[in-house]
Length: 145
Image 1 (spheres, rainbow, N blue to C red):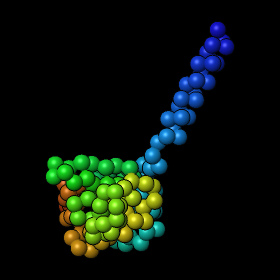
Image 2 (cartoon, rainbow, N blue to C red):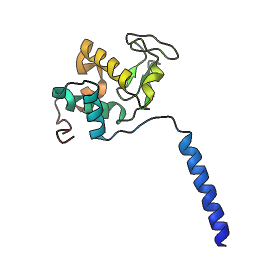
Image 3 (tube, rainbow, N blue to C red):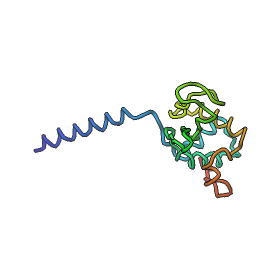
């Protein structure tokens, strides 16, 4: 009986390992990990709480989030950068001149550059999540990060 349990446990462990290895390279960042990453990518400290709030509202701090919108465009990654204007699915393009799929991995340099381009043109108002959950509200405290 003990041998059967061990064999079953080994099979379960192997299946779990295979599932883990086949997942897309992505991260769910903690609030402090996100704040540190944003600072590392030259986001100004004075707006850091707004950026953290925006990312939490838009993607839940997940680098792999994508969302199909009613207008048939798709928003990608931590900042939910939209394919309508900023990137192109399957090829480089849009204002940020990048493939949208590049926003779905755990390397956020390209995401950060494009998010700053969006911010420089439109401010935080470019993100519906920031408007709904951050504007005029108490922002996340990242002072201890």
